[in-house]
Length: 179
Image (cartoon, rainbow, N blue to C red; front, side, top):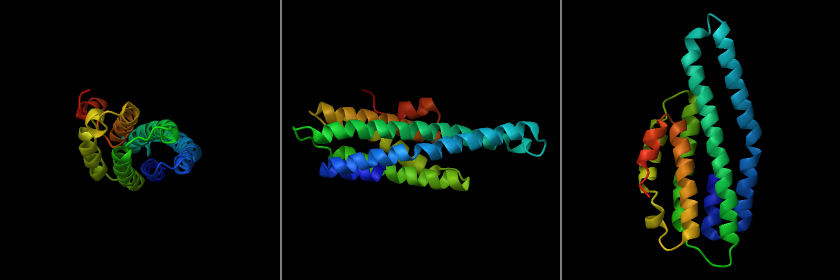
């Protein structure tokens, strides 16, 4: 979804942006299923003596499911807002936003692989922290308030993914440049 969104922004192609939004919406059943499975496993571990040793891990999986769901929802908001910007008559320099979204897509892929394998998402966390520190809308997209509004949405998405990777909310927000 994110790669397609970045391409749509870069080429100003509303069809790519719409397709990205459709892909984001299509992911919701899988995210709901993940949250349900995590909740069921956590409930089972509470009552099963053999499952109690996995409670911490299951809690982490459940929190990750909620945080990833939040990130996907923010991605959809970003795609909806991007569509309006791409369709605007006035051209916008969306290259820096597209570049940031491409980097997020790479970090999200790495995060997904780590969550799927049960390993610590160190690589994605490091990349997201680097990216977060660069997300100053006034530097990335000077003199274009509509592109700046997209950068603000990107910032929110990066915070959600940082939290999903294990960074506490305060650190994730403090990493962003001050506005």
